[in-house]
Length: 154
Image: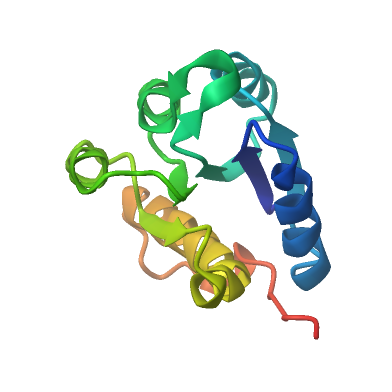
């Protein structure tokens, strides 16, 4: 499967997020991990990961999601990252955006924003592909060869 997503969430709600993404986007493989060490192992063993959704506060291991993402981006600068958090401060958001760590942010306590998660995942995969095409400097490549068409399931 070409559309592989890594979900970094230390709480059991990560399972619900995984199911939601897989339910609405059937052609996306989701790997769920609970901390930075597991995330780095997943990145090292799954070259197919293109998008990462991460929580800012990983309480069980006392880690900051933006620090974990900065480490991931050092290894894989091509990855597109979505911050999914209820506790991220404005300063953390700005630092993450400035470092190129955060592509988009969703407040996981906001129901309206959470409903947009599947669409945002599609946008992130599209962004990854667009950047890849630009990096090859071959604009004549057809996007449909690289992006498996998404359809939202209802």
